[in-house]
Each structure stands twice: as C-alpha cells, then as structure tokens.
Length: 347
Figure 1 (cartoon, one colour):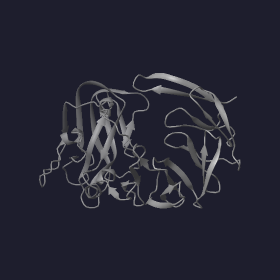
Figure 2 (cartoon, one colour; figure 1 turned 45 degrees about the vertical axis):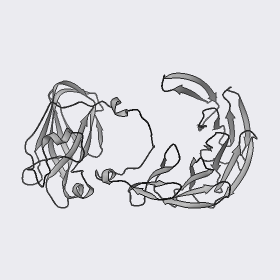
Figure 3 (cartoon, helix red, strand yellow; figure 1 turned 90 degrees about the horizontal axis):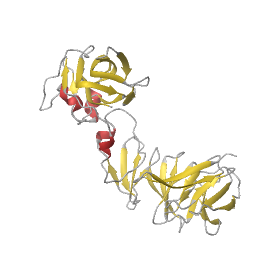
Figure 4 (spheres, one colour; figure 1 turned 180 degrees about the vertical axis):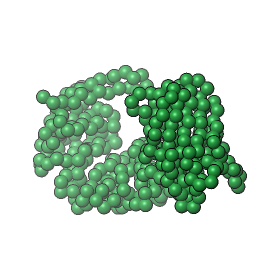
C-alpha cells in the first residue's frame, strides 16, 4: 500500500516531535497548529488526524472529482476548497461534514489563504485576478490584477504579487491600497515573482557562504563620470547599484577582470548580477555580458552563457586561487557600448 510519512520537527532544536502515516497517493495538508491533517485517499475521500494519531473518516465528497488543495482556517477547525463547478466548499472537522457552499462562477479559481477575518484570498489564473471573499456574507471583491501566486504576510495584512506589467508590488489587504517596489526587481532583466514572505529576527545572511576577494584588477575601466565610479572593486563590494564597466572603444570583447582570493578556495558556483543594475534605464542603455570565459589557477577554463543569475559547477567543485573573467560576447544596450557587471558572488 502506498502511503506518506509526515514528520513534524522543532527547527530550533532540530528534534523530531512525532510522525504519522497517511494512505496517500496524492497530497496532504497540515493545519496551522500541526494538530490536524487533511489528505486524499482516492482523490475523493478526505480525512483528518488528531495529535493522538487517530484518523477519522470525513466522508466521500459529493461530486467525487479531483479537487484542489484544501486550505485550513487559521484556528484549524475548518477547511475550504473549490470544486469542479467553481463553488467554495467549507467543511467543519468536528462535524465531519460540509457546512457551507458559496457559488462563485469564476473559472480557474484557487484558494490562496484563509485570512483571520473570515476572508478567503482567491486567485483566478484564467482571469489574472485576485479576489477577497467574505465567507459570512458571500460577498467578493477584486483586490488586484496579478499574474502569479501572491505571497502573504503572517499577520495577513499585506500581500506581495506580480502585476500585469510584470512589476513587483505589495498591497494592503484591508484598504486595497498598493505599494510599488523600487526598480530592484526589474533591473537585471529576469522575470521575478514572490514565493514566500518571511518575517524573522534571525540573520539568515550568516548562513550564506561567500568567498571574499583579496585583490581585484581589470584590463580596463570606464573613467569616473558624474560622480559615478566603474572601478574593478565594484564587482564584489556587496552593492548592486555599483558596477565594473570595461573602458575600451567598442563592446569590450576580450576585456577581463581578475579576482584573486589570496589562497586556494573550493568554488561550487557563482551568482551574477549582470549589466549596470543601478536602475532599469541604466540596465537597458548599457551592454550586458552574454557569454564569458572563466580561467582558474589550476589551469581549468570554462565558457558560461549568462542565461541565469546563479551558475553552478555541476561536474565537481573547482579548486583555485583566482578567477579571471573575460568578455566573449555581449547583449548590446540601447544607447551605450560600455559592457558592465554589477556584482558577482562566489560560493
């Protein structure tokens, strides 16, 4: 028999609190307090579990069709899901039955989260819209037009999302007022959308391995202009608003920058913020590196096409005391021929 083993851990101690099995071939969803679990058996039967690890059948759903993931209420006593007829169904676990059905008539709908004030946050991927549904009154209103799953704060007050222009925004859920982010999410020419909103006092950066440089030199550098520096050191200064830009005529093919670590290091890959990323306009106006050659102190040479921000050395780590990066091809800017790289991090 197929089953899932669900294990609950205390992350502060890394100790397992308990575990249980569910006869599952599809998915399982835990309540916010981790005391209950709703899961599918044959894509039509749902159950729940108490911490005593006794499972009780909730019963077969009346339409017997595959349904979207259920979403628990904040206190974990109810859950909601959407059926194939675009109705929101609400179940009470203590009563083991459906207690409410709300007809929406909106295609492609999915419940994102059950908010504290008896509102459901719903997304229609057919219509690129996100709604607030009051389950007490059945009233719904459009909160925003979005193209991807939103990320919601733990207090349910704000939501981050990607609007129809591909811009990152956040919005106050109660007032509906939008807050636009800066250009930081657009300047590197990649599609960026929120995944999860994390609020913590823990400094997560201390877990991020970063190999510092002892010395950085370049074959050429664009002279300072209007108070802006384009020095080689900018490429690893931790500030994406500054950049190294080569300084020769034309596109800078063959120009290089060399990063010395001062001792042998094990490199598993690197992350690159390409171009002059201080603003969207600057990024578009100047050249970006399309392909570059990486040379290492151990004699290895690799060619990298900059299709991704993160590049990993998949075969095995590279042991080297320096990296020399040469420009092999560029993606041309709309106004200038200067080729720039804003920030690189080796790990």
